[in-house]
Image (cartoon, rainbow, N blue to C red):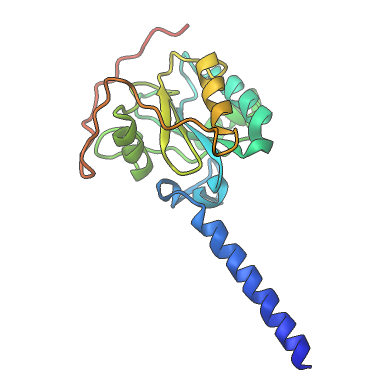
Length: 217
């Protein structure tokens, strides 16, 4: 009986240690939960991103770049089994997202076959931006200037690089950056930010920007 209890105790300790280790791998920037698009469920970003390279994208249903959903889904399918994930954040900040979540879901899930996680609409720029996008803007020294702005974050929670909506998901620069981060840790590249970027203080506030749509290609 004593041996049985001892074995049970050891198993419980191992399971507890495993859970603690999993939690420790979650980057602080993703330590939050957000409602899922057109659903009563919540998305645990910590659980979804732990130990993974992440591509964060602010999306819209009626934009000249909405077709980029297809490219995003393609790279998600290609790398999802290699500790990579795409996270979509619909936003009406540029006045091109449907206020009806059912219609937004129709566009991404049905029209473009999106399978990666999508949140309910959020604010992605200025003082009202959700904490995640404030931290991304500060780290990359740039906030979204239009829909389908992209941030690549490594498994440690560092912003590696950012791209404007003009850069398509299948652009070689994005593919190369993703593949570099998916290499063994000793080979992965260090975080990159634009050469003109300057570090901002931790309490810096990202100023609101006037929406100026780039020309869709």
